[in-house]
Image (cartoon, rainbow, N blue to C red; front, side, top):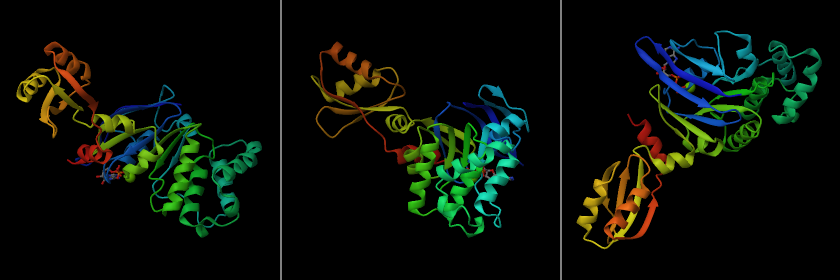
Length: 306
Ligand SMILES: Nc1ncnc2c1ncn2[C@@H]1O[C@H](COP(=O)(O)OP(=O)(O)O)[C@@H](O)[C@H]1O
Ligand SMILES: [Mg+2]
């Protein structure tokens, strides 16, 4: 089931927590919602889940415009909040059974559903413990199981690995990837490597605004200020070549490279063909023409610096 938002906006007092955010998530996609603390991740996710009313904007689920507090909304979404929502005194199995009833799972299906949750979330060894006795990693697994109790098509997970140790992080990431095979997943994180490890695509949010999106490869390839091509050209004086490159459409700047005849050409949109065409028009030889990849850390920093 796909998700689409348009113009989502939420203000607290004078401050825009979320400012005109629109994006789409395809059915079955795993999308990382990435941004520094305070960027507006939680507020956006709560609006997608129908828990916070937007000041402006809409959310569509499976092509259907969501009305506030609609039953269908709750049925299709599983939401794992930032702070895990466990009842400390309940044994894991009772807690999941309680969740199943809360979500209106038909009585005849509950036992089977819970067996599935225990299996998928790896709760077999802990299922009789009270949730208050669980380690942080198992608390998070139990929270995830609770989120999945009505087998929703869409999972919205708010910083699901925060507070876990490295082994638990790896396990929860693997679980999210596994769930992503059959469900649409949006999970938030302020950790770049996490988004890269788990997701098909990233949405980068900063100060309430969506500032970049794409697959890790796209974000690396493009940077944010467009593309950079590394070229080596022979057949004329470097100044002449440089002047010709600067004249090309979409070129924002040309920088001399370290080697003889090498340049970095910064372009606002793809333009490898126009570089080759200019060279053949002048009768110059191209020794090299490749796209320079940005480090993802730099892309993220540039997107969220101000
Ligand atoms: N209920 C609230 N009342 C006032 N301000 C809020 C409330 N919830 C969030 N904010 C503010 O909105 C901004 C975005 O918060 P949030 O969505 O929690 O960001 P994130 O999840 O990315 O850390 C922050 O500046 C935060 O202080
Ligand atoms: Mg948050």
